[in-house]
Length: 519
Ligand code: XMP
Image (cartoon, rainbow, N blue to C red; front, side):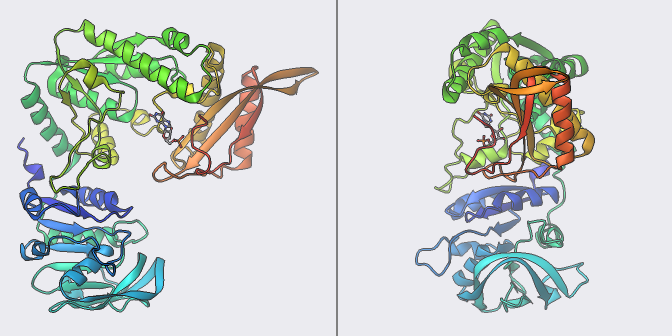
């Protein structure tokens, strides 16, 4: 298999919009490889990437301000199709001699767009004269640059989309990348596939084949070590490496005793039994408990867990003298978010690692086969590689595990109670069809005692809090409005089945000011 799946490629130039990553994900969903560069990237860096099309993202700035962000003027002379979205369209208009003004009214949310000029090709296949779109802007283009035409209007913007009939330069005032613009994907597809002439080569099968070739080329006959956590990213790296290099891969799974009920066994079952991967399970729950003894402060607990993880992992790694590479599950958003991409040299990757400083300690080169992929792509290739859905679509789980869901000092007894309560809650969520609707759900153990009554006797036991949140980016979140009857059922089950619990509460706090985890 050749590496040709990235032959056709789109460049997204980022002006700081919250939707920039979404644009790139949509282009990839359309089957075309793309990357994100900062708007300060130099013309030569852009040319070197050799894109077949360029998309200028939205952004929080206004082109009306002096020194506002822009792309190199010569970008428009390269003969490469350009699509500007929101701020991207406004900078096109301004840089090419048009005029942008503050709109009389800020447009935010749904808007009806009348399509005027279908000749642009962007709206090909859209039969309706008026479409529903998502707007988020304060400025609008009031005069077209020379040679451009308007191809859509909204009640607030007479020029809600523009194009140049021969230069293949386009602008959209609205956001085609968000799902609130139902025809958005079609519009992006028209741009990427028809106008830029990109073939749809970027798909899970192709990504896997390309990765396998690259991994084999890099690693040769060397041995590779991977820290397996049970999370999506390391699971997919394991499956991919196993396919590429078979038993040259060794995994170390640090079972810290702070995992969900039976999680350790499930990880072993999946990788050792089903995939035949060499996995060393380092059962170190007692070591973690010893290190955590007496520690109540969340940060002290986090540090102790992180340090113990490294100690255990290194001990296992050092036993394996033949290891020449360390594999990691870094994904593209990690790379973008840590990129000092201001100087036009594309991605300057900081030494990002998921497992807490291991590369520096081990002094091994790192292999990161997922570093070009978004999370949804990682899941898709995981499915293609035959990983179970339960691993691929599981809610996120923090590195310190139940260690940050037991408030204060951690005790073995608390872990067991929490595992059981969490398991009941999650199974009920799955059964009721809520699991996939919420972004993250879990139980929390509160080491305070509360009075209850069971039959004729008094119970004086612990409290369990249930949490479920809805969020897009985990930076802000709101409590999920689960039905009262559902919560009541979960509460009854927890108290009937776990004698150490006498009260169950539901956490209705939003983030901010709360956080998602309790510690
Ligand atoms: P917070 O509690 O900060 O959580 O609102 C946001 C998201 O991050 C996860 N989280 C962690 N993940 N190590 C991790 O790997 C941690 O120490 C950690 N703390 C929080 C949390 O589960 C949520 O998805």
